[in-house]
Image 1: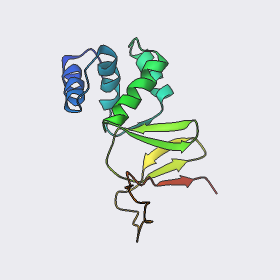
Image 2 (image 1 turned 180 degrees about the vertical axis):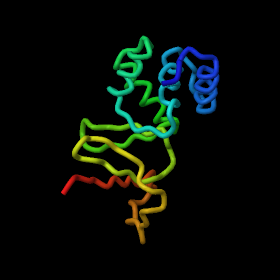
Image 3 (image 1 turned 120 degrees about the vertical axis):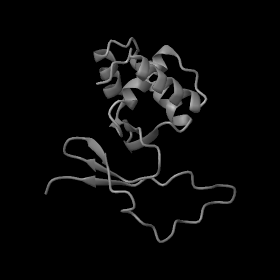
Amino acid sequence: MMDISSPVACECSAAWLARAGLRPTRQRRALADLLLAGGDRHLTAETLHGEAKQADADVSLATVYNTLKAFTSVGLLREIVIEPGRVYYDTRSDDHPHFYYEDDGTIADAPAGSVAFASLPDVPEGMEIAAVDVVVRLRHK
């Protein structure tokens, strides 16, 4: 795990936040450091809160939820709703499909380009498609 007090981590997270137009508060930088450590990640607010506690970052679960919502609203993260009450946050914000493993509740990226649509439905007047989320649910036979 990345040392969230390291100058490199702070520089990286501060730049990431600044590019998105977010003020780099102490809590946002601490959570950004954790999110940026380890490449593409899929995690829940509770998982990130646990990692923050392990890293001695003083953030409440409510702050984690608010920060994840802020990061999602500016496009730093992608929210993947598996079902009501089960939301994952993806550090990879481009359009790509996911596998959801029902047996253990984990989520992973599916191969890019592995899903193709012949067409999408016509949308009502004045509306546009914001995103198409593809989650392939898997379970053991």
